[in-house]
Image (cartoon, rainbow, N blue to C red; front, side, top):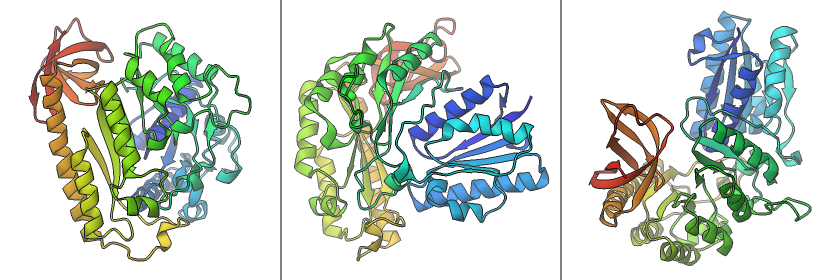
Length: 443
């Protein structure tokens, strides 16, 4: 039996795609392995969101090719956002057997069989991202060892923020038909999954490309409701949604439906309106603040995670201070902090007043410290308001179970070993906050 090793870099969409590719290969008779040296097939799902991820992608390719040099029978396949943007650069690294574009990953299992069984010549399927038209169906009935399921509902983005390379790697928005999503969720419920993370490159645009507005779900709010209506108790979690794409219907379905996690991950990127304008973002801090307050008014226990970029060209000490002050004023739960990375072909790469790396690191550390403070405050809040917590069990150690709550806070609790299993959805009562996590007991 041939063995497959997949290395995944980057976002939840990539994680979903890799799991789906592996699931399809297993159904074809391949075996998964975490031991790279013993693998017959080496697959990289690459990322290009920063210079650092480009660097990591190249290093993985070099490592794969070194293993292939020692054993020429090994197959090396590369896909994902890095190779989509930098195909020529990747080819210079060596004899890659197949380079597959971001909208043809569903073809990888068949290509693997051809390369192994027919000793085929190197294969290149690398259509330009701007030519992607259809959503590439890549269904999966398993997430491997993961306790929650990612569901890819959308791909692509046409916002072209001045710092971002992803539209050049993923193409224009493309939505998955709701019937396909429903079929996958139904199958995975049967497999025992209880939490579903909806993922997309810009999932707030879900449905925007449907030519006929007569599907059972024409937008993200309608899709969430349709998934909620599928029989079987479950939790639904959204990944990132752009602030200006939160419609009244979307807020309503999230805040009023107990199956949807009260967890909002929203890309802010900066708390300075001057920087937001330079970033070509489609909102200002007033809209953002009003959105947060509206959600809080409807769901007092809501958890908020914000993406923030520091060191954007032209970000002075005064403008960074605006961001810091704005964030301190918001009821946030945590921050994902990124240092600006100059990306080829983007508008921001040509802007003057690039920020020194050391300055950007200092600003990043300031926001990371704020994030730690906010998580601790939020954990205490959940205990104080006696919020009921739902948790997917991720594992246990010495009879203490752990996982992530629907509020996106780490939790530990004790339980009868025979009563709780990995992947179970359990209802918990918060007992006390312990730093950034909660100590709880079964409700």
